Amino acid sequence: PFLLLKALAALAFSLLDAPFPPFLAATFDLLIGATLMLHLLTSINEFGGHQTDLTGTGMIVSVFSVLYLNFMFIVLSIAVVTGSYAEYWSYVKTAFATAAEYYQAIWAWLTVNVPLALDALRQTLKELL
Image 1 (cartoon, rainbow, N blue to C red):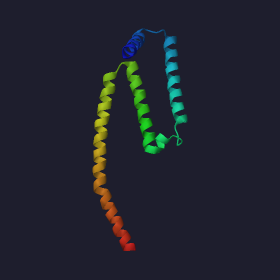
Image 2: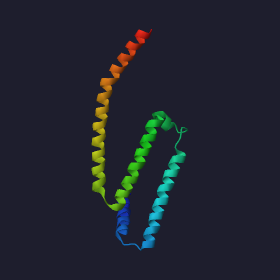
Image 3: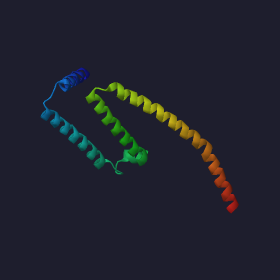
Image 4: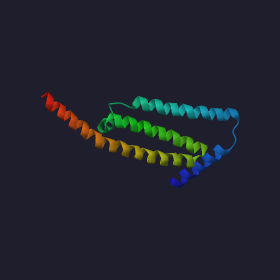
């Protein structure tokens, strides 16, 4: 099955390298756009609180995860169609490294400032009561 998939991908890429007449290229662009629109509309329509897998992990985490993965899928699709794999991989590596730095900085700030704020709140409540 994997060899067949690889052969189909090679066929698709060889067809993409062939020059298309302008009307055919415009038709392909229209079909790709319509497919993307259908994907996004059905995702929005099917997404909701009735799904136990989403409510189990929390709606906020689920929403951001689905949005992020949809964005990455669209960017990956564009990278495959345009053949710019190196730029995509470079973006992913840079984004993960930058995100890790930001999360570390946020965690450091939280571990320093939240206990201080809680102590100040506790002290204020003691004075009020």
